[in-house]
View 1 (tube, helix red, strand yellow):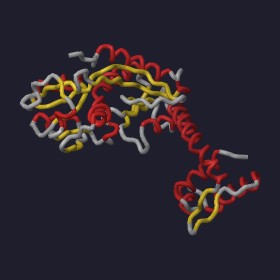
View 2 (cartoon, helix red, strand yellow):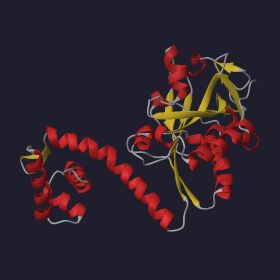
View 3 (cartoon, rainbow, N blue to C red):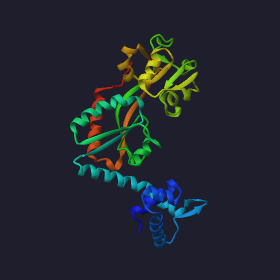
View 4 (cartoon, rainbow, N blue to C red):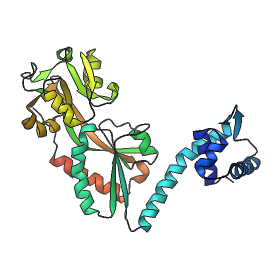
Length: 303
């Protein structure tokens, strides 16, 4: 009979490649690990791995078990964490993943009242994922995904929480500062500062420059919003950020904005969650608070 420890062993073998390393990872002896899996192989009538030099390689049957392990183990661990939290007197935890670098300040406006309303619930915000936010959601590493670019799947539900306009930001002394909107050709000689994200996932490229065959003179990545805006304010280059974020900073940093194209570039920020968590109380409560915050600000600016 297939049991949880079999799934963990298969996952460890796949990750480490040798019986020795897998046993050390699981704090088992090699003989105990090997004996357990031999019993499973005997009951199913098929080998789960085979030797490939000094390493072990999963067979087709082993890969089938691994597929189950990768889907089931995170769910079991997630539920166990919740049970331990309940036993410790906590109501639970809400883990939020972010795929929107400049939206951290907005997220705090929702987190603060949520923590006050639910004092027994811990909130953790994660911005870096090994395989991306959607995979983290599927793998139960997070419970909510904040993203401006939802990838629609049958297993995930997205709720739009507010609309905003993505704009070009520059120093008030910049040659483009007097233009109400810019074309892709206007940026050909510019240095563009962005967050360290693949260009294909940046709106300035995917929705503005690339479709028009445009490009910038140089593309530089900066980790933090504050430093990015300081560089732009100093006339070192331009950026592309949400209008609401610039309005909060423009007075102090002498910044101004222009629309990306005559019609502008509008976006919607979404909160995604697993369909199986549709009735989860903390998920619903956070989304409702996000919707209220979204209706109050930051709003979509029509200029």
